[in-house]
Length: 283
Ligand SMILES: Cc1cc2nc3c(=O)[nH]c(=O)nc-3n(C[C@H](O)[C@H](O)[C@H](O)COP(=O)(O)OP(=O)(O)OC[C@H]3O[C@@H](n4cnc5c(N)ncnc54)[C@H](O)[C@@H]3O)c2cc1C
Image (cartoon, rainbow, N blue to C red; front, side, top):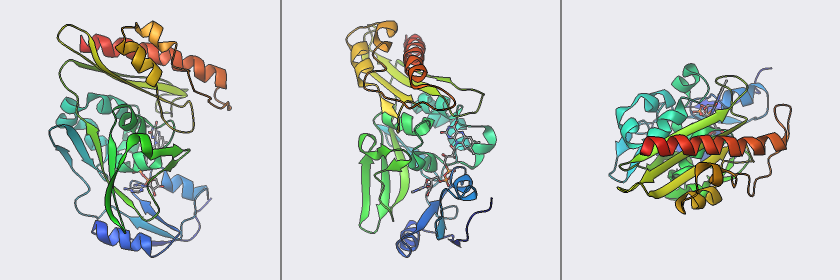
């Protein structure tokens, strides 16, 4: 199928992008196109105007502001995956990026596009959620930040308003004695996961768990933070004990790829494996 007709603009500043979005209530941002173009081709989306961010200045950067890593929305996923600063300050992001599709997709796909797309099986939304990150957006009313817990509203749905542009993703940087892990079950390498667990833990000098972060993908209409599992780990539960809490509050759907029960089973299995590996890496 071919997409329906649409107009196209390629502004060079965020302000002009916001103006263009404001000029048409059916306008949509185009970033790397790796999710949007297939949606257009299948006529699952039909915007009348595409506002391409490719030429906008200042959206392609990776900076360390001391406490956080700030990544410009148009930074290509492949660049972040290979960046030494990201490897040092957020190894969970690097490992997560390796699970995103294939290198060709990551060469075009952007960090901001993946987070804005909010696929419930997408790795990057889960990293931002697990680590308590936030996004920065600019709209007609100016700039604002949205905390990850407020960002993901449902299937492919976020609290970024129509007419707003996501400009940067901010992720708290990891400290010393941090371990991380991404464990997924997928039908084929490069496929979206049937279920996955993304985990980061930090130990103190005595080996006590200082903080634990775990998000699950593929088990709901959005990435899900496993607060019960995190609390159990913090109170000294083993990965096996804590992971039994992973299905708490989840109600995944069944589809041709996996039943709801199987996804719940995978939530426990992937959580246990991810916690075990993260704790080993932190030790
Ligand atoms: C074969 C294939 C396999 C894939 N496998 C995976 C996978 O395993 N895991 C995974 O996470 N992803 C996967 N993806 C998706 C990939 O990560 C996309 O790159 C990503 O989801 C969207 O990023 P993009 O830059 O291409 O955004 P686009 O496709 O251009 O945009 C996606 C959506 O976000 C909106 N948007 C984009 N940027 C902004 C912005 N700055 N501000 C406001 N709104 C914005 C767009 O309007 C659109 O609605 C796969 C894609 C393909 C084609």
